[in-house]
Amino acid sequence: MLDQIAVGCVLVATTSIIQAAFMLSGFGALQTLRTHERRFARHHATMIITLFVLYMFLAMIVQVWVWAAVYVWIGAIGAFNDALYISTATFTTVGFGDVAVAPEWRLLLGFEGANGMIIFGWATALIIAAIQHFDVWPRPRPHANRGD
Image 1: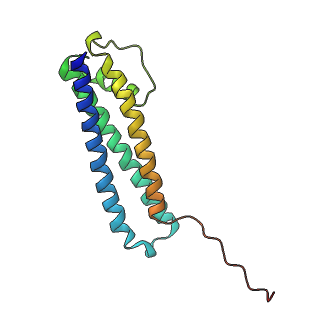
Image 2 (image 1 turned 30 degrees about the vertical axis):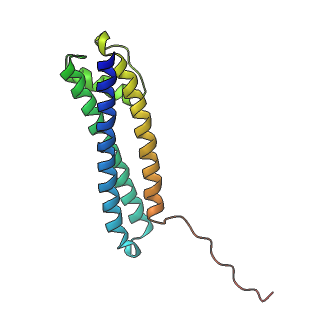
Image 3 (image 1 turned 90 degrees about the vertical axis):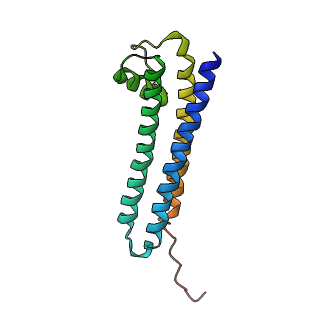
């Protein structure tokens, strides 16, 4: 059981590093684009935010692949396709039931599910921050002075 906890902690730390790297590079790109913000129409900001969402999604894909690769490496799951399926279902907390996982490594699935919840929350916070970064919220129009 301690080996599962150790591997799980290393994987959670690894995925956190991956998420942080994507976050820093993504916000670096947003900061560069923000210097040209006045030139963007609202639909440009929408496109950039959509690209940022896809970039955060790419981070999650990389993280799922890391978990899957470790499942195969430690022998918890035989084939990479099966490991990728299990990892995706677990990371997204959808669940599975039709692929066998070695009993001595099943605890890792709980670690990955918790890791996925944390990463999804983190990604959601980053996406909201990206939206705020471009100041795309509608502003109230000043009322005309009626002479009151």
